[in-house]
Length: 265
Image (cartoon, rainbow, N blue to C red; front, side, top):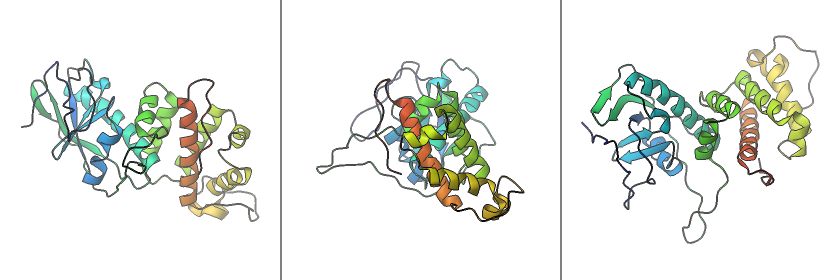
């Protein structure tokens, strides 16, 4: 049995430990997955949500668990937070396979086990951007900020939920496209902000919808005959939407009156 949390516990931030001091967090949920995916989480999530590394164990701590008394409630809340984390990490790194709930939870009374939790194995490795001398360089908004935004922004939460599925198909990609397009005010705004060019928008739409381009994976069974001028593969479609979402998230996170710089695809 692992260490039990106390009601007034403060996280250890001694050398070799990842994280910042945070407030009281009663419940913790243990995560599972490949070590390459797990070990990067404390680098991105060191506030709220917070991922605490304890040897080979990784614990998710979130204010979403505050005041909860029932482990089943914690499990349901944990699923939402984990889905957002997976979505944010996959947006940051397409090789991220995802982490899962192990079924183990703990509070000041000890550890609690909920049967039926799934596990998965994946391999991905992301690194911190550094400059000469090893000092981390300033970075644009990333997974931590995306997850925090999703806590108060329904559109961002919907996007991360869809991305968390992994291996997105044309249906998934177009749902995300529609969310961003509606929120930003149309495709003309996307091009005006430098997020996309008209030919890429056309290629995405026709590839997602036209069975003559994407076969049975297309969103529609019948379209006008003819060969479209601009098309893209599903892989290119995923990269296109990821770039679009990162640009959109950066805008949502920018202070009023301080527009973000244009991001390279």
